[in-house]
Image (cartoon, rainbow, N blue to C red; front, side, top):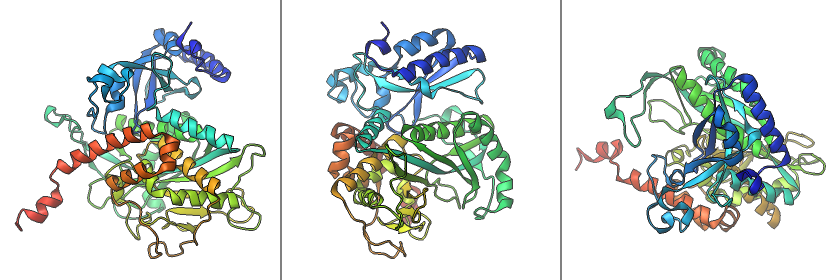
Amino acid sequence: MSFVSKHGLWSAAQRSAAKRMLKDVERRGLKAVRFSFADQHGILRGKTVAVGALGAALANGVTITTTLLAKDTSHKTVFPVFTAGGGFGMPEMEGAADFLIVADPATFRVLPWAPGTGWVLCDLYFASGRPVPFDTRRLLRIALEKLARAGFEFLAGLEIEFHVFKVADPHLRPEDSGQPGTPPEVSLLTTGYQYLTEQKYDVIDPVVHMLRTHLEQLQLPLRSFEVEFGPSQCEITLAAMRGMGSADAMLLFRSAVKQIAQRNGYHATFMCRPKLPNVMSSGWHLHQSLIDRKSGLNCFVSRKDFLSETGKQYLSGLLAHAKGAAALCTPTINGYKRYRPYSLAPDHIHWGRDNRGAMLRVIGAPGDPATRIENRAGEPGANPYLYFASQIYSGLDGLDRKLAPPPSAHAPYETKADFLPRTLSEALAHLKADKVLRDGIGAGFIDYYCRIKEAEIARFNLEVSEWEHREYFDLL
């Protein structure tokens, strides 16, 4: 009996999808399929399987080392994996042992930029069949199941800002290698700050066309293509999708954009604020609402008001847990440099009606079926599964406690309200102390996640920055 069958890992729909996948691979003459999973940072990792081994890989999963789950963003291993319990207190994690990545055949795609190559997203299991507790896709699935028991489905639309540069020097000399290596030297595609001007869009249109052509073939729900505020900055929006679909789409979108750009001499980055002269910060604006599972209607719509009682309570939950959720929606040291006043990015924890300076922008009117809440706090590099889960547990707490929101912040940078965390360290402290998020996502995962992030912060604090050298070298 196969691993998948023995442990009952696929639904009937997934079993049917696996059969279609095998037929599609044969019909298209594919040579390989990438088995990928999202790590703790939302970065795709995995192995490429030859077509001759595909059937066995689908049935039994693909082995992969557990150390991938112990790494920070520089690929440094944070946990002592060669000690008892591997630093996790879990025998399955000792000694760089293997776990299994098991395909979700419903996610199968053919990668248009990689000849003869398919792709499938995977879930994580130990050899015993037990789910790996650090699988962030599974953590979102659990949150969605809890939301479903409350009678709702999560609906999310995505606005993703990012930069695309022309590669001037890829820095591929041996001395550029490291952990991490030297990033590429780049040049801009546009100059100046000409937000949504057609002339600047036409300058970047060849690159957007290249991206759009491939992204369409991935069946992503593309909605709009925009030239953003800063030089060489773009925004692409995706239409709303239910449940896991939107998080999976974000993961595939980011990875696809970077790979397509790289193959064509460009560097795409979802880093929040690159250290380049005159370059602006990028955000990830998450539009969300709840759908009633019985009627299929938007639960945020009110006949008489801008937001229903359900919507107001959900909004209040997002505000109540914004400090704790910050480490999940803005998980990098760099991302907190975006929280600044008068910048189209939030710096306080409040909401506003159609106000882009507020952390939560409420969009809608009485009877508007597209009524929703836009969270503007996230950075584009966030792990979508953790970001979504943080929103669901925060919103559910608002519903459970029937919280009421404060008045709308019409002048968001002047209205008195708590500040968002100013650093990742501060955000991690709030995450550890947030009982709702800790109980929902799991105390074990929160402690694990914070340990990895604290290791990144420790490395950062040991680096001598340009600011320090400029500030003190001559003065002292």
